[in-house]
Amino acid sequence: MTTGTLITVAPTGAESAKLEVPALPVTLDELLLTAKECEALGAAVIHVHIRDDQARPTLDPGRLRDTVAALRDGTDLIVQLSTGGAVTDPEANRLAVLDAGPEMASCTMGTVNFGDDVFLNRWEFIVDLHTRMQDRGIVPEYEIFDLGHLTALHRLLDRYGLPAGGHVHVDLVMGVPGGMPGSTEALVACRQALRDLPEGTTFSATGIGRSTIPVMLASVSAGGHLRVGMEDTVTYAKGRPVESNMQLVARAVGLAQLAQRPPLGTRQARELLGLAP
Ligand code: KMH
Ligand code: ZN
Image (tube, rainbow, N blue to C red; front, side, top):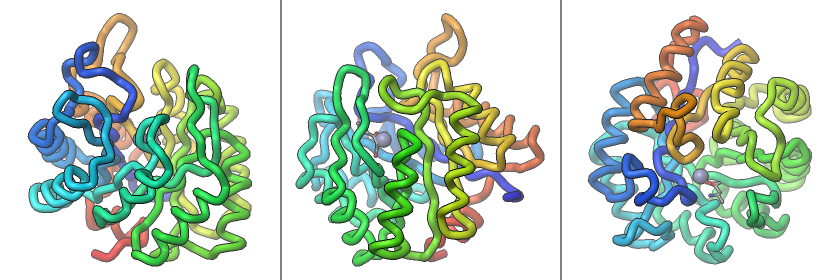
C-alpha cells in the first residue's frame, strides 16, 4: 500500500466554457495563481490545458512553452501537459505539444466515445506519442477511459518498452459518457487488470461529474491516488457550483488525510513517478 496520496489538479480542461463557468482559470495569470494555491494545499501535479485570448482551447506552441516556463518558475509542481487537447485537435498538433518540453504529458490509450463526440486515439498515434516521450525523457501519464485501454497499455509496453524513468503511472478517467462507468466495480476491475502491468505500477482516478465522489472514495480505499479539478467536475454538490479548483483540492486533501495517506509533496511525487529530482 502506498503511504501517501499523489494529488493531481486538472484545473481547466478543454470542454467547459468560461462564460458558463466563470471560475475556470483560462488566462496564464489565472492558471499560475491557481497552480500556486493548489500546490500550497497539497497538489503535486498539474494537468494542463490552455486557452486562447477568447478562452477557447488551443495547442498554440508558443503559449504552451510560456505556460511551462511560468509554471516552472512560479511553482515546484510537476507540469503535465495534455496531449489529448480538445476532440477537434489534429494529431500533428497533439504530438507537437511535446516540443514545449514538459516533465510529463498525458497519453490516452485508446479511442472512446466522448459524449456526442469521439476522442480519437489510433494505435499508431499512441505508439508515436509513447516513443517520442521515451526519446525526450518526458514521463507519460497513461489515460484510461475504458478497461480495454489497459490491455492496449500492456501491449504497448510489451512491444515498445517502459516509459522514461521506468515507472508506469496510469490515470483512470471514469464516468465519461461513452467510457467506463464511475463505479467502485469498474475501478476494482481496472485495479485487477493493473496486475498484468509492470510491478509497482501506480494509478490515480478521477470521476467525471456526479461520479466524482464515488470514484474518489473507491480510489483511496483501493490504494490509488487522486486527480481532481474543474476539467472533470464543475458541481461541488447538488445545486452548488464549484467555487474554485482549490475547493476541490482541499476536499481531496481532507480525504487523503482521513485515509491516513497524506498528500505527497512534490519531491516525494517525483520519486514515485520516476522523475528527476
Ligand atoms: N479533452 C479530452 C478530449 C487528456 O488531457 O489527455 C481529452 C483529455 C485527455 O482531456
Ligand atoms: Zn485533460
